[in-house]
Length: 379
Image 1 (tube, one colour):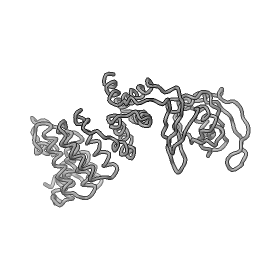
Image 2: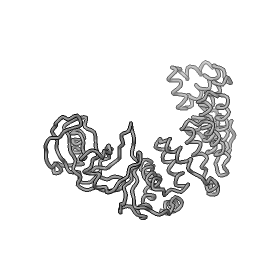
Image 3: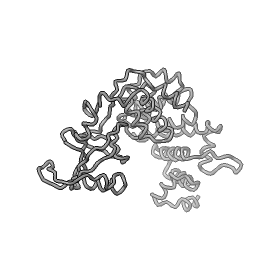
Image 4: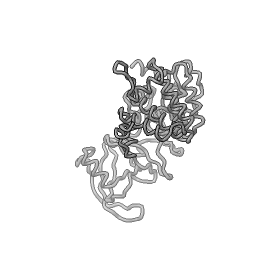
């Protein structure tokens, strides 16, 4: 809890609160969807101010019924409805005991179940009116004059966000940070954590926009937070390769970066060069990563290579892990692509890695239908 409390203090901008809830809706071809929990069931409704009621297909209602999100007691009545093309179809009216929208709970919302498999999930006026005054700005929905969101709940959102991060619940963390961001409650450190959660959720575009709002990089230097790795990661996944390499190099030079961290940074640089078919620079950076893995364990790069090729004595300690194995595999592969290794040397090295249980080399040999034991027996 102490860790979470300190993080909240770093993130929380004590701006004046306007007692409003801000929700970012998902937009697709001009249609806006809003995430909701219906009696605990996670759903996404089309936000439709022109619809008179909440509606759903019979298929969706059956799903809720079969999974105990609603019961037969929630069925109110039946009748007929006119759908968009003017067709009259049968319907059933059900009661949704609790519809949660971004922490706001709407009780006893009536919904129309249409006897159509193609009926969309619509959040109409029977629910929207319960929200109170609203404003819509593009895909941002503002629920105004809401007395359910106060400073304590803002603090709880921060606590929920960091608890979610600690437990690897990145989608939940992202949702909490997103609401705090839209409320203007995130400091530069808060935006840093929000961007990290976005990257974990593969929302690369949002992460890019958020990190570019961070102003005080000196703060991160003083607090020994290597923000340059985040910049490299974000820029790489937004296809800005030159900037990504530049930031990864800054991360490499960061004073508190460990040798294992450095190995990861130059491996990322190597991957970008490899992606762009600059195999010579890719190979040099994979080699540097192997060197860093050696420094991390107080051995040299030759020791790491001997370890992966099965050349250590029984008395010598192995430092292999998946990251090391991958790096050595890519080092050999890019050496071949760069023309440093002949075809014979490449095959021998890959077969030797495979024989010593390098999973990446094994997959390559299997894909190429190479019997690595048989190949090596010829040497």
